[in-house]
Image 1 (cartoon, rainbow, N blue to C red):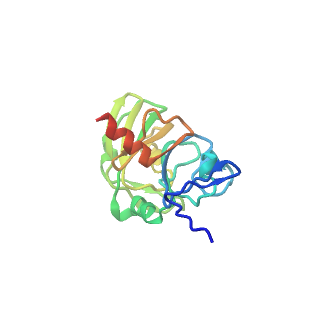
Image 2 (cartoon, rainbow, N blue to C red):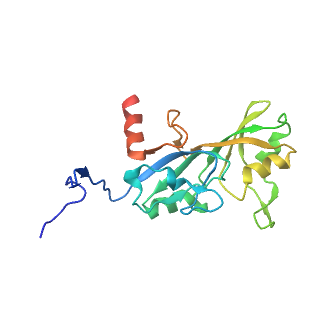
Image 3 (spheres, helix red, strand yellow):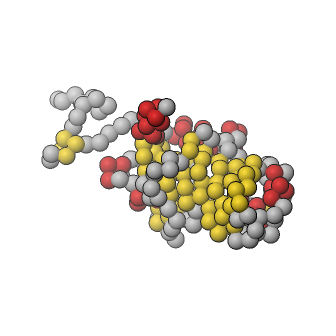
Amino acid sequence: DIYVEPLTDVIEVDGEVVFYKENITLMMNKPQGYICSTVDEMYMSLLRLLDKKYSRFDFKIAGRLDWDTEGLVILSTDGRLIHELTSPKKEMYKTYYVKTGLPIINVDVLKQPIILLDGKNNEYTTKGAKITKLSDFELLISITEGKFHQVKRMLEYINNEVIYLKRIQIGNLELPPDLEVGEQASLLDVAATDSTEE
């Protein structure tokens, strides 16, 4: 019998090193045209974008985005971490960069609770959002919820429309500016990079 310590031993099969970690957490800059699902549906799953070395791991997805929305998504094999990131009780802010089709007016209304419809056309009351207006057609919006098309519906509430939407932050975790659309990075690698830049 051969004893293998998977976390420290280097294992090769046919000259190729086998990649293994007990828990893996990645951030991805999701492109448009992919869905945050583990299976392909009307659109392809973002799991298709993972590097080959990650393809055999069972990733769960935190922070789902619509097929036409870009930006920060967290994937992890650690179920407890996913729960921490997605539990409504945590009230973790998610920040989105928004481009609108019309000049932005009355945006302060969204800082207060408003009534919208969810995916089943049931009314629900939002919590107040944090809003930063960047220009007449751009803003940052931070919400702790993530109801069906919530940001788009919030802009519709003030008679506007979203023409581009990108999530740039979940809690304290920001999307690195050098992470290209469709790429992923280990959170450990990102943390190491951040610590060396300080």
